Length: 69
Image (cartoon, rainbow, N blue to C red):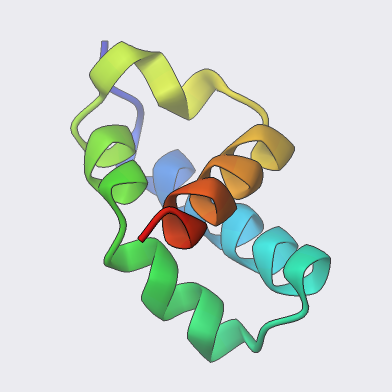
């Protein structure tokens, strides 16, 4: 199942803002990390309905992905 593109953009925005505030990085850094991440690719492609996961969960997944590099 795929999500509405507008709703996905709002989801991305919330996750990026949450990631920035929770992990103490600038919005620009959070934006860069999110759009270069595997997580973004999976969410945008509708894999495993990740878009249905909470914003907090996705921010934590982004942090885990970034720190595993």
